[in-house]
Image (cartoon, rainbow, N blue to C red; front, side, top):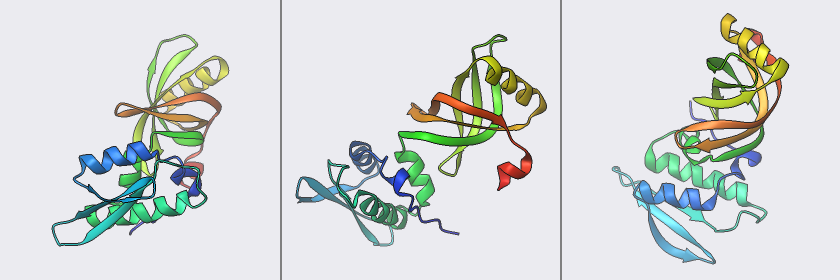
Length: 180
């Protein structure tokens, strides 16, 4: 099953410089200038060619539509799912909901560092966050019981992992809530 990413909120978070770095690393080349940006091109092993438009500006009205078309081109040429590609391009998601299981608890007292295994753009990832007070106690309870949890915050990519800044609305989930 192929998934097409159309969530404009998520697509608008793709930074042009991150996309350019991704393209460069993955063998795409600047084919021609397009206004203030560039059109990047690449052929795959079966001669399917794709083009990706990278503008230095994220503030134009159809930025999300252009990113949607870019993901489609990347999917075809690289033979990877759009979710896999998007997870490589995401560097920050403000006020996002994360659901998953607590994998690690550091420290016995509040505040404490928590590592959560949660889904980021359809991929299971380690997410670090710091909780205190009642939320920290609830996290300890969830860790011991292996109960799923949910939390909101600002997700930031750091190295190969993620950090959830400004965590709030931390809560236990039932298995049914996690699946739905």
